[in-house]
Amino acid sequence: MDNNKKTTFSLIPADSRILVVLPHPDDEAFSLSGTLAKHIAGGGQVTYACLTLGEMGRNMGIPPFTNRIGLPTIRKGELEKSAQAIGIQDLRMLGFHDKTIEFEVKEVLDGTIYDMIVELKPALIVTFSPGYSVHPDHDATGAAVVRAVERLPQAERPLLHTMAFSKNCYAELGQPDIENDVSDYLENKMKSIQAHRSQFQAVEMLGQNPLKDKEIKERFGKERFWTHQI
Image 1 (tube, rainbow, N blue to C red):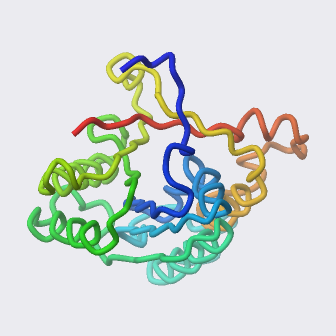
Image 2 (image 1 turned 60 degrees about the vertical axis):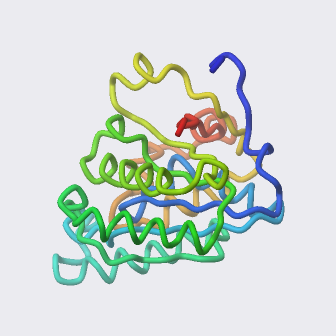
């Protein structure tokens, strides 16, 4: 693939469905929320399947406002608020265990994802790039999605776009071939990020001084993905 040619989600029909499969509440916020809001504004449908509630996370807010017992409930509410900010029509919390996705029974994990693909018939699936997404849950989720898609006949497989963050991702994957300008959807994106209050603080994200519009656009106005060939 010629990585100098950037494409966009406009290649996806406006009224089509995107299936997002990620392991943690907040995974959608920084890298994907603007793209999803843009697609929804164009008439598209989005199903977000979040595998866990991030119940093993260590961030409890600054200052802490919950504890280990209360964290799943807090994270569930934050995820719902983020999905609402983006406009996601179908949010599914699948109940897998945080920080153990790589140890889940593959038949169960893959089968759950496969069943959703068959049910929803998405034009596009977005997940993490297996092996290039830093967190074991991210990599295991991406690998499960790839295995589930591979079970489909070639002609029935949706597009698969992935997100990657590892230090070697650019050297080994090349530059992302998908770049979306989401500058018109930054309000949705910032509300999605800020919904995850137990994990991110405004000062932590934006510094002590309010960011000007130009700075926000430069930091958050582009979202990039790799097309995963199957």
